[in-house]
Length: 220
Image 1 (cartoon, one colour):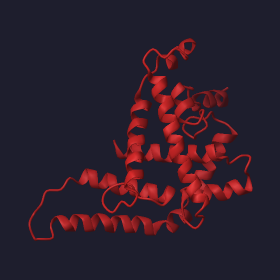
Image 2 (cartoon, helix red, strand yellow; image 1 turned 60 degrees about the vertical axis):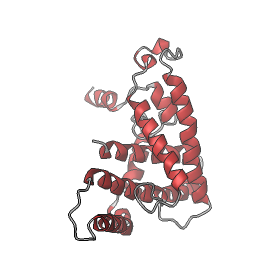
Image 3 (cartoon, one colour; image 1 turned 120 degrees about the horizontal axis):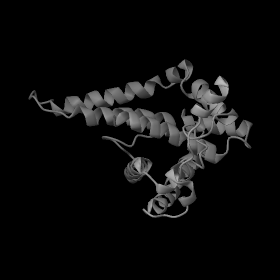
């Protein structure tokens, strides 16, 4: 009985936001407890957050910290005291480390190469955070799930398509450049071994879970 109750409490309710914004509730934060959840957790622990993996990405953290120090130095290089807003700079630091680990790109602060791509990414993340915070009537009363009283479903659908196009672009880009030491390329290697399981949607969903989790931590 205790094990059964543990499983019930471990599961997440299936809201419409999970269907539209979390690849039909298949991401680690939304999927039901079971083999798929355990496998995603195992992959995260062994392939992404292991000591060996984090050590191999040390250069990314070092480069981003040095970039922050150069940015701070440029503010006071004339010997004058200057007031700086460290919160935004530290957010840029952690977001760039995260995105370089995931996709080998930096989207925040100075020296951003893909300016338009960075703008789209930030826009998607802002809309995603807003949509996740919305309370949809259908999520509370299942029989009303398909009646869009508030217009939330339309927003979910539009954002879902925009987000999927962006993430698919990152995955396809990595297929053409397998030399990057990134999370996406690691998943593509797993996809070659088990293509029926590691579909593009599973890869995109895991990337989204990682980005969203870090995003919430950064905005606390």
